[in-house]
Length: 473
Image (cartoon, one colour):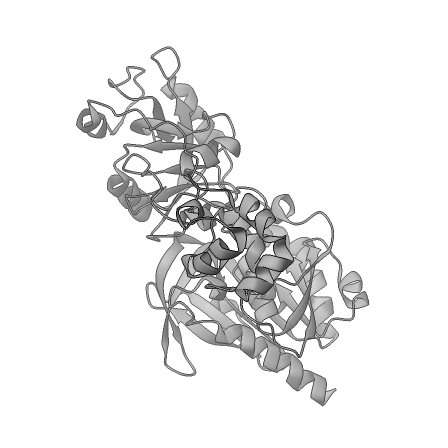
């Protein structure tokens, strides 16, 4: 019978004792507690110190919810994906995804029971891994995510992979039944994790047909509804979808930003010690949180920054009072033009003060607006971990992670702003830099590069810009 990690740590003499015994930091021990498992390389020394057998060090069995009901008519449900307003429910279906254009996708519900909040823009993500990070990415606020990879749930969930305090997405759509966890880091099944966070999902959907509809017809609103008493009011569901205003013109940064400033000191995770050693030289950086992912903050710290995170509505005066050596503009959801009224004056104030600025995703779009450019909504958004981007200066191609439905209009860029990166999918803008101010930005997520570190150089470039500006000053 295995012992819990907490019991083993107590037997050895506490976190500090077991950390010293195994040659790791207390941060690594904290991660063991979260994962409810001690890495196998430490088992012999821990077993001797705790006076236990190796069998008792086997990881605890991850908690899981009962398996999802198997539909004997799954093929029939899949064939019933159609444009219709009928209330007849195919046998075995327990939920439906209803699009604003009237298309109905039947399936089996999981996670939390769908409610009115399961209403948003339907999008798709092409990543094969990282569904927990995707669901907790604040940039997905206001959206229902379709995962094009069919096997979702296979690594379960854990306390380390959340990118924010809460799930920003309004729901998820998958093809197959959720896979049971088969990973040593898993502490809970995806189904149970979704129930706890009140997030609904639907499986058994023809996600290829849905993806093609989004790709060819552009983004539209959808609502996820559950079968009640054997029926669904499809007309009412469609009416809700049609009435929802959509993301264009919607400011969502205020809904996902932090409530008050805080500091961040955790570095990038590294196997097996826990986190990479941090550089000794530190630069004081203020990160404006429009929906920041935790791994972005980790990368800034790993590059040599002392990070203070501030809310999206923080003014230029309040930012400058913190005496930053650099200012970072984070990712986030919604329409940049709707966030601009309060964000652009703050960014402009920082630029006028001569402070180096680095932005990504929404921060990239807002920096472009602060420099005089415009943004627009893409016909097909970029979401997934396989997006090729070309660095114009070096000619190198990075395989990037992206999540955005808006882009910078290159034709609107002023003469003192140059294009640095372009998408090899649709030639849309992926990066800019000012030729007169210490400021640059990229559209993609360098903290989540599937390379896996193709784009980390951007954080190092930001630090180098800070150092260069400091010497010049």
